[in-house]
Length: 170
Image 1 (cartoon, helix red, strand yellow):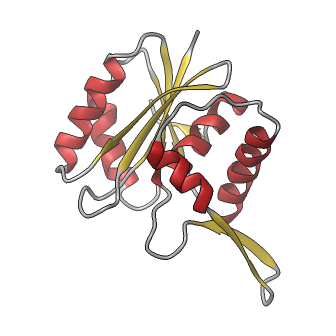
Image 2 (cartoon, helix red, strand yellow):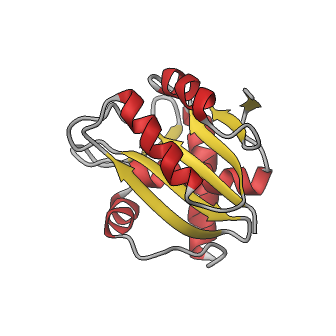
Image 3 (cartoon, helix red, strand yellow):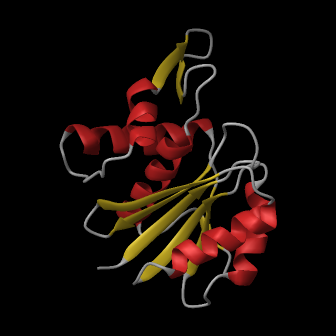
């Protein structure tokens, strides 16, 4: 089966993780990796080793917000040229869309998950808020918690559904 990868970047310090998820094209999570307390170059080197350890990787989708653009440029230089690299721009609208499609897929059991305590904690605490002034909803981790695994999983699942990200950089 083809394998899709998504990366939610972190600055490499504190409790914020760079999260790398791997899903097969039949919507089954096959791996999830967390990287922390590592410099940008070492993060990318670790990610390349992890990606290379999987067979049939077709596409890597990276979150491009903030540090993602810089990390993505480093990753592009080191990534196997046969693997498509896609950037995903996370806006409130795009985030709502991918979180809602992930939530529906989990509820309908259309996605297969693996045992991962950090992922399950983040999924169970993730919340929606509504702003009555703007009449918009938003999804986030509660204050003091993180959403690295949720976002990486949602981006990866979206990549499988759409077979693309926002645009290709390779």
